Length: 349
Image: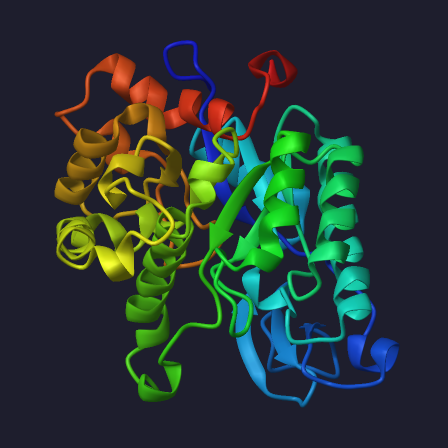
């Protein structure tokens, strides 16, 4: 299954438990997601599938059993020669709006499920945990527990309510992540401007890339990468809109130092060797561009499995790109992910 002796790693793969408690009943208020599986009572759901439902009864998304079934997941991986998946929850589960102790409890459920997948199949899975970002002290507590239960990082949203990731409240979290040597995977969620994008799936097509660029700019120009030089940030969806607008962002940094150089004196583009991105571009020219700018040691295979907006033939774009030599391909398919998430290749052999 390995490519030229290197593991093929999908570092962006979502997972949920098959079941979890009805959170509205558990916490005493609504707003949460639950899974409604196919049954005699729900003949409208395709056999084996489930509907992600909001607890007010509104439909959110249909999902296939490979979202929770490890055997089906491994079968899919084998079909595309994926050796290892780095598991993360579905961002709609973040629940940063909920009461902090309730989100902490929910994170425990989700993180323990990921840890169970790893324990059952340690050569096929690694994983990152979720945190109650609305309560940084509790987030630090759960981050340290993620390390204890064998996770290699944490996944955070692109913002938490009104707070971007460079807000001073998160200093203790970044310090703890650096101390624990855990990667921080930043995934867009709760997209900006969605009230103006009711059609055409625009929150996912336009809002998500903008959210990721916002997160990168906040962490860079907020000086977080300067203060925590050993902290490994990983951004979803090829860095969103950042790479395509990097020239504009640098130009703004130069012409308005009063606004853009308050926490760092380095141009934003100088930080692209300080963080990692996945390779989900759906476009060969853009993939070539980000590898040219960042280097193959900062870009890695990620699929957004098992959702349709992700890469449906994992690794195909990388492996069929004639601009990449064997070493570059090997780096993109596995070596970068090992470095980004602090993983030991020997553990998966």
